[in-house]
Image (tube, rainbow, N blue to C red; front, side, top):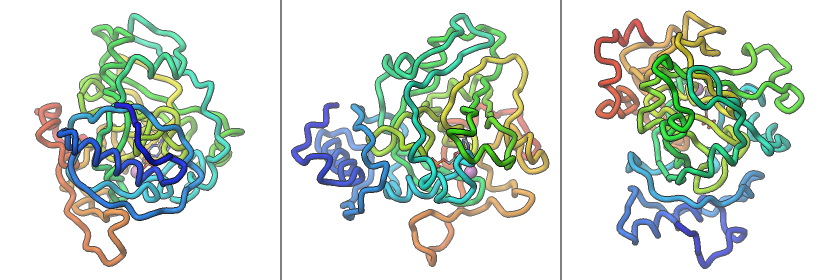
Length: 315
Ligand SMILES: Nc1nc2c(c(=O)[nH]1)N[C@H]1C(S)=C(S)[C@@H](COP(=O)(O)O)O[C@H]1N2
Ligand SMILES: [Mo]
């Protein structure tokens, strides 16, 4: 869809712009749910990211998205610091072009792919997803991306490709948080091939109709909405098809607390806190916590992936 809005993007916040687009989408009979009149927010440093050409995608929740400000100033991205506002404050100078992704392992088309090679063949979709952090807070985020499956198929995974391993950039000069050993760098994550090929799993390039701000994982990050947020690895530079289950960063650092699967399961407490409920960011300090849903509300779509798996042991 072309964004031929009458208002200049420089005159409005991207959030307002996004809501205008949603209004436009609704008027066109392609509602993706929810409605709101956005309050005028000050432009943040990242509001200048480029507008993307998108179409409404499937699976959007009808819940109201969090504000642009919530989504871009309350983040986890330890490469830029461990405080929630650190990624927003410290990632402004991070340059994400040129960017290339190394594809390797059990596939027919390994190689180095430029960001443009990765993204250009795909139609970018708006998808509003619930986003649930293992720290028991949540948001609703209007991502822009395309199904990871469509990308992975282009690399022709073979029958030995049972898992997919992802790696974040390791460059302490550009990612100052990597100068401290808070995690073993680089950040790594993994999915089973079935999880990676599931149509909910998104390769994300934007948010609120715009290119991803650095603090959200520019230029490419994963979103797996039925799993805790840490599965959504940011600033990806490597994709590897493997035979064996890969180790993930949180498993390596704190094996007693984090497993490979990391499915949102309100019945399995974290060793140090309950996972039964969550605090919705932006709802206000006095707002009651809301119950956490099995698979973060995506049970109908994904429960079949885990039939026969003990979800208490495989956390
Ligand atoms: N490379 C990298 N990816 C990462 C993280 C990180 O520290 N480094 N944090 C994870 C965690 S714990 C969460 S909750 C999400 C947060 O994504 P958001 O800041 O866009 O909401 O990113 C995940 N991806
Ligand atoms: Mo998280």
